[in-house]
Length: 65
Image (cartoon, rainbow, N blue to C red; front, side, top):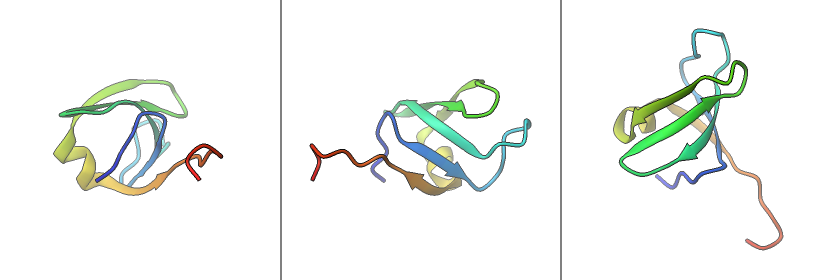
């Protein structure tokens, strides 16, 4: 799965604060993600995170096209 820093992940299950969207800060063997509502940062193993992704929201810039 192609997940890059700067992507917003919509997850299947929400964070305890109630928000289910997270910003990707770092990707590799682990993902470092930040909750969009409360700002809590979490390190999640890649496999666990990829299982819980519902949708990837990516900002398309003119450079990529």
